Length: 148
Image 1 (cartoon, rainbow, N blue to C red):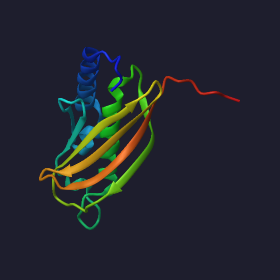
Image 2: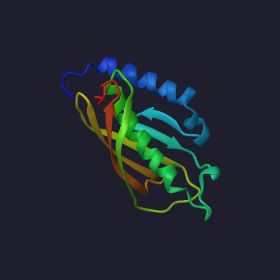
Image 3: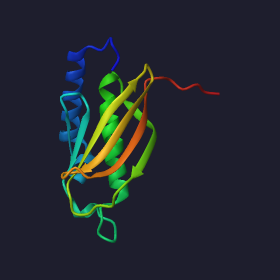
Image 4: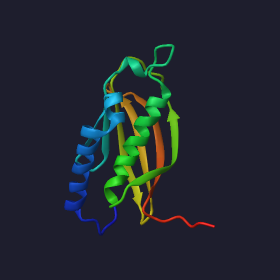
């Protein structure tokens, strides 16, 4: 965490992002997931089992797990920026196939720079089985693009 971070501002931003996601995000409603933050500032996405998110053979689809990783990393990084951020790169490692279980994703900020941040993420079952891990790179969208 950068040394010059205003911790009250950071907490207020986390609370704002939690309200926005839990109350208004269509993907949160569609998946049934909720956002919270651990005391250490890492983001937590709770995904109750949703049979509508299974693949044809009955397991939880890998795209759902990748979405949990992306959201966990994004919400770990987003409080450090006054503007919206965007995912630049997402690396996903699927470790275990799972079915019919609740999943919990956790995102931890590794580095927050002036324009780019990096987070590490993991998805576990409620019984603490590591399902997937990944890293994400996110950028501040307020930086203008050069044209021409």
